[in-house]
Length: 409
Image (cartoon, rainbow, N blue to C red):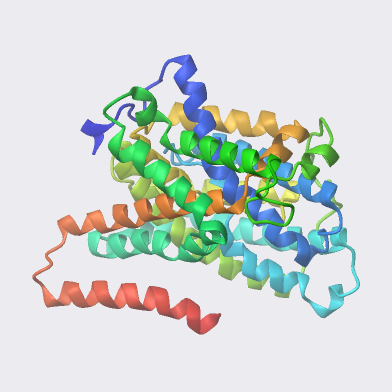
């Protein structure tokens, strides 16, 4: 894989390309980063306060930038973007729905969520830095890595076509542009090699903006571009620790949150292998994975202190971006992290990204998550598929990986 890379993990692109590629990673991760606070806002009771929701989004970007720098510098040192995780949504909804918080304001609910996130983060730090994760790696080979990574992409199907399908014209345009730029126009010009995702998003976004201005997409339409959030957002605001109040710790909330952390750890280990393969880095060893999980725990602790209402984990979307652009440079991701921190303090700019319609985000997911699934399946080249034992393991892992979530749903 490394021989096909434009920039390897230790390469430093020219300044202009470095900034543009870093911004592309910023654009790639904004969908999930914005979606998580928007999903949590009604449960927290913040949906009636759009300004506070904007602050929560900015805090998420701010913490993501800090934790990405920590992970790429002191953690596993892979070009992995750190950001919010969907694994913690279910326990967070459960905490917000507790009878004791039925009449509480959003700050109080958020304080309980913060306490649970910090508690789980401490456990993740211990699990990582004591080597408990690494000790399990001797049982992990290509036959287990393949379904683990593939299921990361496949399990996110609900965020692909259903979101893009809110308007297939715009969602399909986004998918088509990503395919056109990354697969067909790549040999024609360097810009299509480096920025296929960013170009697709900007073009689709521009089309929806024009159709909104001309009245084709009225207010309430899934592809409508609304500037209301930009108008109400402050110009500058720097997130700070315990900005919503001191965290409240509870045993039941912490135990429930640990289930989400467990899922996040399993997903992250698979992400490390996928990222290393696409970035041309050596296969992650025990120490690399231990440092990575430990640093993700520190990242979740920081998220709890700042009050993102969520933790942090490795972003699969950005791994897909590495595969599509063939740029695996650590410096590029670090440049994107500095942008996250800087732009998070500029409220108007952060609010601008909330105007990107959902069909565009869904179209991007369809292309990105499919790439993650394919990377997982590529590990099967090292597996003897003539063995009925291996076939059973693969089939059982795929089936149960998709079936068990339905049981617990």
